[in-house]
Image (cartoon, rainbow, N blue to C red; front, side, top):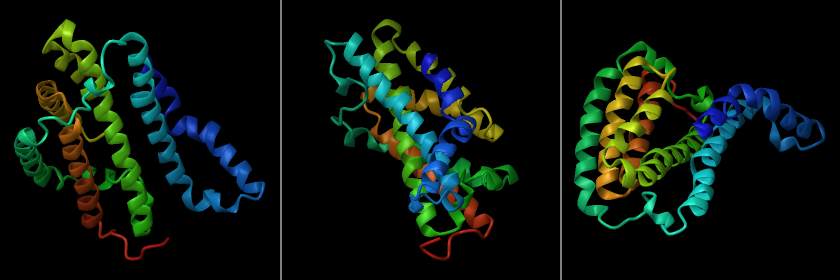
Length: 233
């Protein structure tokens, strides 16, 4: 609750605009020309968004884990790779189901206009690749927090009920996104949570997440005839 509340108030665009952006502009005025807020200001805003998620979803849980779960290994937070390949077919089936759903959802106008979040992604391949890199990083943080930290900490006391306890806040962080995607987060939370509980690994879920996210951005750009045509902006 504390992590998500801090993130809501300090990890978004409003805090960046009020506190971080003025610092960048001050640095630019002091002679640090490469900052170039006019060209990359929006991308910097998303960098702050991702940094806040990594801090709240990865760094903070690691500190808490070392303080309160001293007998357990950090690898127990979904970071074990053992059995990854043997369960990979399940994630492949899940990805196939999601891709079929994407085929229909991608036709919706709100989907095409909503993605990618960083509207400068169509300006150049550099912008698009920079955006996808930080976008994928926040998905790792997301999987680590919800399918790793939360499930690992609650598994012993709550059993499989931990999956549904995790799925509620996971759904809520999707509020503001297209309606069908927010509903889909309930299903995704339960399915990915169940698989993570079973395999004690977040890696395949992370791969599914970034595959879907990358495809959504690409499909939306293609539908708007906005794919980049040059490498540098």
